[in-house]
Image (cartoon, rainbow, N blue to C red; front, top):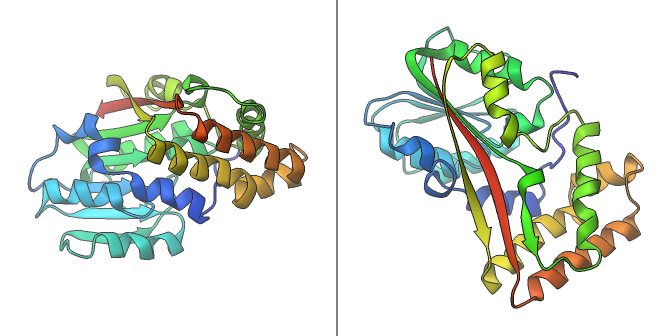
Length: 266
């Protein structure tokens, strides 16, 4: 599998709305107890920087480097961390980080390894730039462990389509359950595993989540990849979107996103 997979989701607003919702509290709670002022952090795949901001607040005045493969998204990260003086930014490839060995106390990645072609190689590189005694912290969704109710017609088709698109592009949607295996293959021997979940159940949460995921299946690069790869037609994707909206309208609607998490001591 190629090291550089295609980033399936792109940066349409339906995708960015989900990324911008993430915070250190709701997306990196497993790591927060290990942070303290003065630590240095590399945040790999920082996206719009909303998690970065929370990490930077906790380690200030420690240095935080926010890194992402997409240069345009770093502008949003700069805006979301504008009040912080300890954050710098760089365009980076997780497979070839431009830092010497043992540079950072903490190397963090959230929802990154599911999108790369060589997650074990990426973890080796994250391990390389972490100092001895430092931490590599990774959290990944596991699509096969997601659950929702009810399941209106149309909505039940979204995940098979997404699996085909993501894996054709070199990614692995079930990354959460593979983290321990990948970490051990990367050479880590001290690995602490955990799991946590996001849950969307209020009317406001359901409407937002349906537009984020249902919306990207008709308007983002996910839809473009699905059609170009022959995985679905535009008409089929529209039916999927309508299924998401029917789920959002259900008074008993509920959705859980399970994540795998690992804290790896170097």
